[in-house]
Amino acid sequence: MKRREFITLLGCSAAAWPLGARAQQGERLRRIGVLPGGQDTDDPRSQPNIAAFLQALQQLGWADGRNVKIEYRWPTADADKTRKYAAELVAFAPDVILAIGTPSLASLLQATRTVPIVFVAVSDPVGAGYVDSLSRPGGNATGFVLFDYSLSTKWLELLKQIVPGVTRAAVLRDPAITPGIGQWGAIQSAAPALGVEVSPVNVRDAPEIERGVAAFARSGNGGLIVTGSPLALLHRELIIALAAQHKLPTVYVFSYECAADLAFGRSFSKIYPLIAARNGFFH
Image (tube, rainbow, N blue to C red; front, top):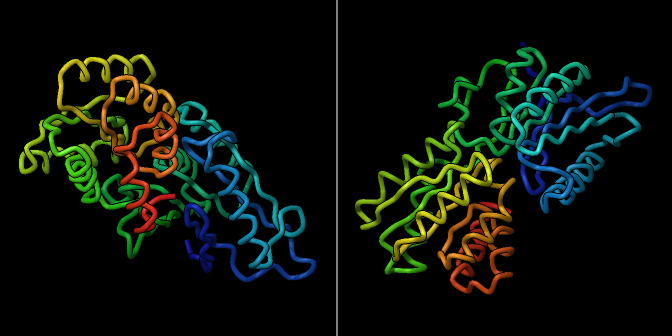
């Protein structure tokens, strides 16, 4: 498939759109599909992200309802809904689809190999087989990598800096997606040098999270690392409440999770959002 020019949009998450040249007067209405995995309209990122996206489109000459129509679907980390909505967006016959997150990208690639897809917030598109390489993705998908797995080791280092006495860490991850496996592997490989014993806690559903965190908290000198996944975001309020309940020092991927954690008065969490904001890793 011959690629059209990609227009880069930067908001909370960067996005690129292969929409070709700017729409001219009388040109046909273009269509954009958006599949935000792990988010819903109540997600603290959703409205600012959409507002920034629409503003950037307007600056580039595209106005929703005038020369472009945007169709959204919000699966909220539900695998069945993600597959269903991916098929619906493909049937919408868009010029391009924005996939936010690994599950969204996977479902869209199952639904189409011809509609151009731009992805963001995907940790390992090459390892998962979604693209051939970052420089030459091939196929019908291209986009932006959320972070390299090596960054996951920094989360463990940071936990150790926050509370030097920590000797145990529970890693909350989704083992059903490639990033969940990759992030866990990176943390696990760094643990011996830091003198920390790590154990996984799966985030497939609320009861599993509650059982895993409660069991881990029975022994002392422990902390939590909440890795990036749609399910971790879906259950973020529960995870934050459990971390506060069991008085576990915690490192989060996103700064707004730290802000919510601070609502419980947990001062040891203050360092991470400052580092995240300073380096521009996450918003």
